[in-house]
Length: 231
Image (cartoon, rainbow, N blue to C red; front, top):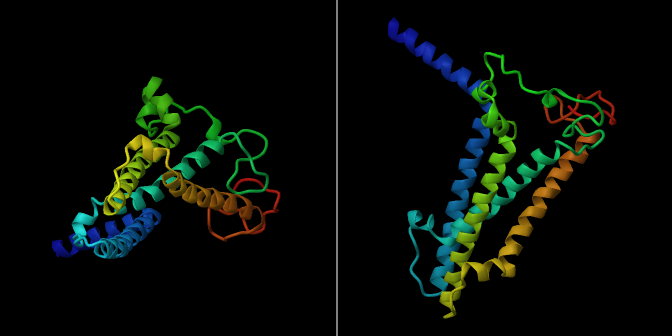
């Protein structure tokens, strides 16, 4: 009997955990599936290229260290984190009338008030104050900006490795980091991803003025007028 009760409580906790974290778990699962698909298909493309140039194919694990994989991965992460950092930062001061993704055009909102240090359940930087609180006030934008910088550096490293490998197959000299940063290939890889991210943000900001999705916090109520700003 105690074992059955323990199993029931464990199952109940698991269900509650999934219910409370369903959104993040769903996107984490989609990320894992997509990453696996990228690795499998990328490995096939990479090995085909190597064999066409008289080189031996690499293993599944070895592919993780290739410039081909690093460039493709960080090139996309870079644009995602740039988009999110700019979106979070720009929504502080910029408005879009009628959009659920914007703050109200006039007046202050709950996110503008100063944190209350007396709240018992407040995060520790709020209770401590000073520099920890100052950083915590902007920690989301800071974290996203740092992730962008790290991904940008990873993109440079991976893309340079991939470029130098291709140059080596043609018997040409390798490029240095500074030379490659000035190369059009690197910036083409960046801009082709950046523009798509900025377009997607523009789309959700503008489309949420006129269109609705019942039950989504990214949408206004179905009966809300188009001029209503904020969700």
